Image (tube, rainbow over all chains, first blue to last red):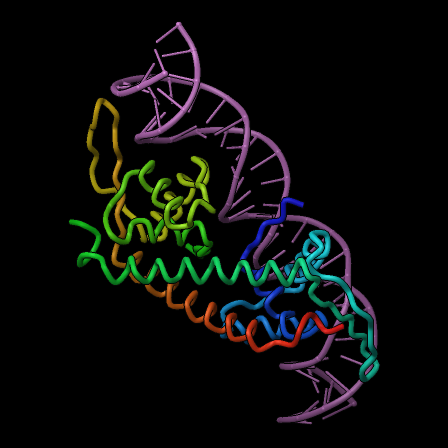
Length: 111
Length: 111
DNA sequence: ACGATATATATCGTGCGACGACCTATCAGA
DNA sequence: TCTGATAGGTCGTCGCACGATATATATCGT
């Protein structure tokens, strides 16, 4: 518990928002969602998946074999779904405030 | 170098966007900017200030004594200013994309 | 035929960064 | 007098990010 909502964790949740994905699929979707800025490494992904699972936000939902390779799928729980929504709202509010601060400020720094 | 733009770092930069502030003032402004969600502890603040200084994003700008208490002021450099602007744009893009994903999705998870 | 790249899973060790605990000091108010 | 707000700072712990590594199959270029 006492789960820390980092940006990586948020991106993983977001990647699962529209549909379940397998590990590698999550990595690709996170890369896409972040415009290539965030590239999840294997260590980050599986550690995250464990913690997200422990927090009850993500759960495994079946396996599949494609071309002889195993695919392990994960999906959002209701808790996870609520968390993504809430975090998105928080981020949106912050970004809005930041934009307002940046546009209404004097030239630079403050001499 | 190889500075990691965490949310805490971003909030500190943002708190300095409109004018220079002293340590305690930064803590208060970050609390305000984040609607009380992020409360910077002393350890986080000064570690951050060191790293931000090392990355050339923040610099000290004079001291002042008010009511017998020392105030040490910090301000953004041009690098820091550019970084806040860029990070805000990145966050805005991400939030926009996230909102679109969340509104255009099927009921829940995937059943 | 061979090596590189992509797909796919997972573990481990390192090191940075967040955070609380702690310390000092002044001033206001109860 | 003593608590809480203001103001500065250090230190140790530990969670988390991340790269390295391992295993395995398929594809593509040379």
